[in-house]
Image 1 (tube, one colour):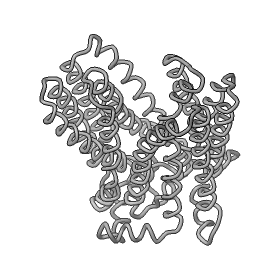
Image 2 (cartoon, helix red, strand yellow):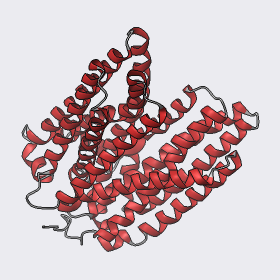
Image 3 (cartoon, helix red, strand yellow):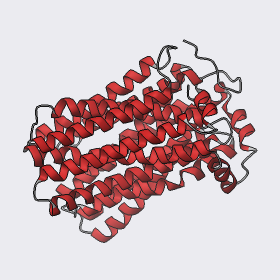
Length: 441
């Protein structure tokens, strides 16, 4: 294996540093799962709020992240990423407490004030996630040796999933028996731990990796956000990669909305069985991430662009097979196909993040990471809302649930297929392709 060093000659970030940043990503996931899963359930079940409210709040948390390019540019110009990471985690943790307090207000009868506070809290959570997430990816992109970037992306994202799983399990125990006060306490503990880990994990990491000088040298070409965005958008590869991110994440986010209702409506699976199906999907995603992490550093491994293409194609094929199962009424292959879908998701997701870190470049990398992060967040929000609306419409206008879900899963497969085609446009064609192929292997 040839790990190399970052392009500016600074010492590359070792696995210890990568794991430290992975801990930050894990805590981001831990706080977000409390807000987007646990608190949303409390709104629906314990507080009897309309389902549209938590759906709107989660979408809002995504949509406000359209300002990610500004955050990336700020970290480019400031010469440091760590303050943005710490500040984002602090804002997110504090806003999660506001969200918990908003539920307490609603539970106490102040519904209007509670909903207003929840809207503010979820918007601030999205800003905090954007600040920390953009700066963290930009830091990894600058500090990790090129041959390790796909593996580093896989490690960091697996740690995020682990953080979500551990937090969900521990929070479940801590919230039994449930009370809104206990939810506030648990949120405060998780948020405080996230802030402490962010401070400790980023302490001195930029200095040892030579990051400040690298960023300051690059930011001289983009004195304003508008100029930085224009510079990034003039790059055909950056434009096409933005569209790839939007298409692939739109398809990816729709899965979370469709899979369990699909098994329930079409095959009459009980909630416990559909929950296991979701677990199989995430297990497959973890296996795909681990596959990329273990194989990508070796010389004989497929280049990153092939991992991206293969993951999208595998996801599309699994969705088409699931649509065929809906039409045939055969459920025997449902679990293995969902596992295969998760595998494709995991492969394409971490490979795309690795490619993102490679393509961000040494100059103005925070702006590009922010641009692609904004595309991802907008697509995730649109996918959540769009899949729910499409499912309702299909179930209303088509008499058979099997036909409705076959069409929806087929459309999702088309999105993944289009994303695969777009990845070929990014990495495999046009005058800019040789430079991109060199950057991403």
